[in-house]
Image 1 (cartoon, rainbow, N blue to C red):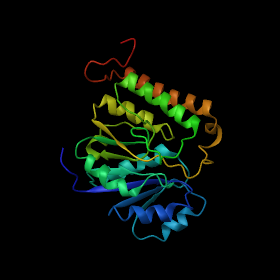
Image 2 (image 1 turned 120 degrees about the vertical axis):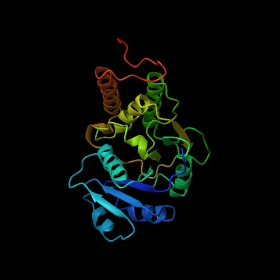
Image 3 (image 1 turned 60 degrees about the vertical axis):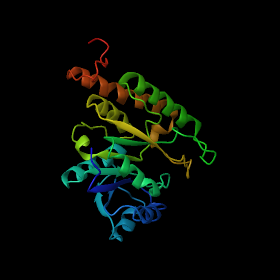
Length: 250
């Protein structure tokens, strides 16, 4: 792999009027090419974005979901000839100063995934217990079933080689999209490295939306998406590399 010549920083955004300007101002210090996917915001975020001349905005006319916003960003990166796309959330929980580290690491791996649990610091915010437990359960399941070595399945701070994105079949529009992505990455035998990032929680009242605010419902949803992704791959006869078994009855 070579160092990327042309890279993009993409932010999925939904109702982030309180954070969007500060986050984008910071991102602009480290990225020349910035894409914002506004996933149907209705809190004034769209008006803030319309005032900016330093970012490209793609707007979904209605809220389609976190996964759908990321998929739009991936498609934009592919269509516009980028080598790497860095994804960063717009809620202030990711530090833009670390963007160059992700770009550099993408010269050595197909996916560079941030981890809030790879290294612990006394300065880290304490995670909401239910989120930590769900993350741990899902991460362990991914590692066991797919042969991955992750410590954080859900961190949105990532860098992707665009050539690698072309190999992925991503269809889930919601918060569980990363689970489908990990299944696809394993099937495509993509190389993955994790980078430690600080654990920052600025607003513990944030909602996943509707029933997903209930931990048991959210865990069941994640498990269903993961199982569906694996079942679909098995039906299509797709297999993990290195003779690792994906389909129990195969």
